[in-house]
Amino acid sequence: MVRAFLIKYAEIGIKGKNRYVFENALRDRVLERLSRCEGEFIVEKEQGRIYVEAKTAFDPEEVTEALTHVFGIAHICPVVLVNDKTFSHVCEELVAHMKEELGEKPFTFKVFAKRSDKNYPMESPEICVEAGAYILDHMENARVDVHQPEVSVYVEIRHRAYIYVSSVKGPGGMPVGTSDRSMLLLSGGIDSPVAGYMMAKRGVQIEAVYFHAPPYTSERAKQKVVDLARLVAEYAGTIRLHVVNFTDIQLYIYDQCPHDELTILMRRYMMRIAERIAKESDCLSLITGESVGQVASQTMQSLAATDAVCTMPVFRPVIAFDKNEIIEIAEKINTFETSIQPFEDCCTIFVAKHPVTKPNIAKMENSEKNLAEKIDEMVEKAISEREILKVEP
Ligand code: ATP
Ligand code: MG
View: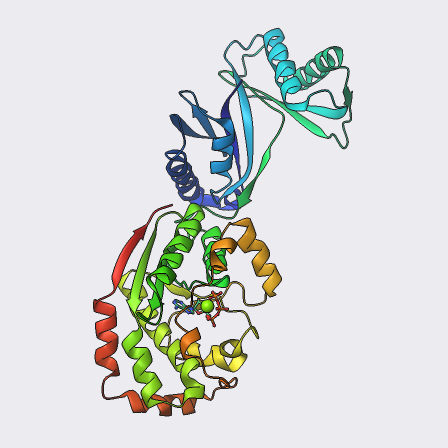
């Protein structure tokens, strides 16, 4: 019976002297994720691997599914632990497990053995040969192929014997929390949740900001963003979501500036506010879901016009992705269905029929002079009155 999981690392294996930082973070993220599964688990680091062992009854499928959400994991192997490591007993358990996993279908295999218990009476090559022979004797559907086996059979002799024959692909990436913190501009669309997921995959701790414009945008539109943050949190861990009321700023820009510049001016204020909140929250960068050429506000000139108001780096992980490539990821991480719910987001109401597509920064700055009287005060108010939600997975 499967009682443990061997977790093989993704990239963190190559982190040299800082490796323990990554391993500890991975262990912590695994424990956090498993705390939401049925059962009790212990997690142990050992020789470049992590073992998860169940101390109580548990659901192997639920645990495997949970672990596919933890960045830093390359492979998850369900392991049978054998306390009595007498070789004949290990072989019996091995074949029983293989029958359960592989059924009656013909397959080719190769045995890999590892012996950490140096007092064990057999050496690794002998374990391979003998275990292979035992499998051939007891499974008619088995055939050896040492070059390209369909099934890799692992037998590890430690203080107990560990047996595993299959593995599930993990999500890759690096454990969240190992690459500092970043502020995601999260809208209700398809792109920004994907952008957040992609940065979290590189170990970045995500914080998020959403600009809403009540009564032009509804409570339901805000709930949709909270729902999206929760789905991203399935991978990224708990996300602090700052909800900023943008209505007054939007109306003021609408009253004072040329309408074809609205979108870009609004985006510049979103970026400014996002950066202010990011600094307060110890974030070192911003993240958006922009993709070059997708809409008027995402031309090279528009991107330059929004970047110009920030000093922090702005990461746009989907910048070179086609919409269908972004959708593919959105479907994989389960945000797509929520993203396409038809609730207005704050930009759609104020969009001009013919927005400028090649904004000139000097001209934008000039238009912003029309806002001089009240804008600073409005920005302060929007920041200080923001709502902060803790969105847990
Ligand atoms: P998305 O699918 O992420 O909504 P989009 O194609 O609708 O993207 P835009 O509306 O131009 O693109 O927005 C570009 C980016 O600006 C978004 O990906 C997001 O990062 C940010 N953004 C836009 N509107 C908001 C908002 N109301 N609150 C927070 N961020 C926003
Ligand atoms: Mg949008």
